[in-house]
Length: 588
Ligand code: ADP
Ligand code: MG
Image (tube, rainbow, N blue to C red; front, side, top):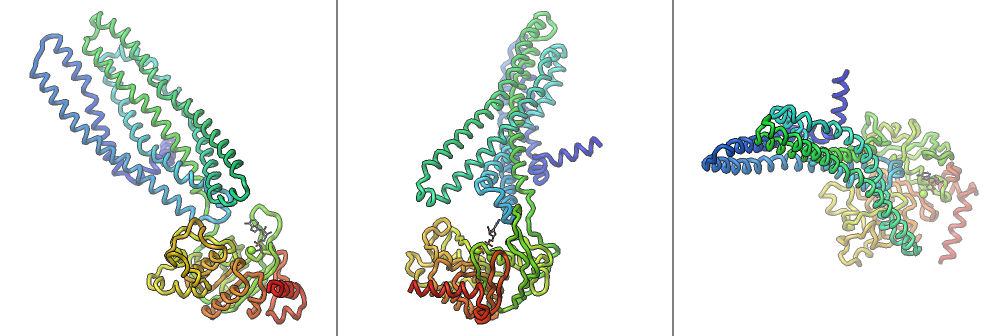
């Protein structure tokens, strides 16, 4: 039972989990060289004791020369060992740092929208940088220094007991105090360090929001207000850091103080013993040297404990994210069958934590190769409906079928590869335009020729020609140097570049004018003949010729059919259509 618990504790231990489990060899080599140095360091006081005992009798020059030569050799050997342990401990800690950071990033990529609502960007960034660095400090310097200290704790006491048991007893009187004090201070450090890291997350969040939303901040003249907030957060951060500094600063001095108390006792009592003739002067000096040598491990223990403590607190924050389960899991996934139909079977959706249903009892079948439009007022659930198809939001079982198979059983990667999805909000990376368009294309051959065709298809060719470096132009953050309509068209080109079987455009042409929207839809319909095309739009004339038009209201499908059929119905669609036509006439 005890060993089982010990084992479980060990396996959960940060140092084991992050470092030793993976890099056993480096750990062993590092430890051996560390112990080698420490063993060498143990000898000088004994040599000095001998020299002193000899010196009180006679002076011998050759013996001193030999001694000096020995020291030279020892220093050289120490240098080599020090290099080896540095490489093995500190070097490997950077490998661990890399491992955790990569795993962290990869994991985040599998998480869904719900996760990103829970954690803000700045918070995630501080976990990925600050916290992982704290873990590295723990498994690098923290572990190294800790091992070093432990070695001295095991080796020096037996030697001094051997030199003089009585003297050792007196000096050790104060020692049991140390673990007790260390434990108390350690707890305080743990709590305060976590507070500091959380505050840092808060600052990162705020700064990140302000930088990415700089235009809003400036145009609403709230920069002063924001400055005040950040200033306040910064002050709080400083206060928390200072409150952490107190126990941290206490740790070292408390240990040192205890050790020096030991030395004072030693001099008082040991001096008396030399006079008595109970021990030699050499023994007393050697004894004092050993006690002094204990100062370092005492301080080191404190430092090591605090580094390990910080590392643990930080690892907890990293683990919190790592324990978030990817929301959408492919259970024994089936391959995607191209050219499938899409069927919604009585599907109802509500968002997590919300009471209202956003979609209610949706039943609709879209056959392969059909062109389908979804129209309806803002907030009627159009985006929610199309987001279900690439499973951007989780789909309840047995309610959405692709080619007759429940979508949840289809391999998610394959499914998404087959769907060219353009979300309502555009997002471009700060890369060259051509890289943004060919983002999802891996095949080099396709990359070569398709970009110009795509640019023409989304009717942006001429505008691209006017840019200083044409398609090679670098975009600012989120495509800052383009207009809204240009960004929208490039996102469409990006979705089409993967040659999808199902194309979904979610209201993504709102910033181009009606004539251009119509032209782009026509181009896409022509080039992707036989593919399923779903378009969410407010401009009804553009989709007049579609095979099916779905009219949504309050999360329900209120009408569906072709343009002709719906006009005959003389219902919601007809009123939307006549309003739209009227508006367009007014614009002209
Ligand atoms: P549409 O695209 O037709 O404008 P949406 O599908 O975007 O409509 O939204 C339908 C309803 O769902 C709205 O009332 C909206 O507030 C709500 N909604 C949309 N996205 C979320 C979300 N991530 N969390 C909670 N509610 C949401
Ligand atoms: Mg929408």
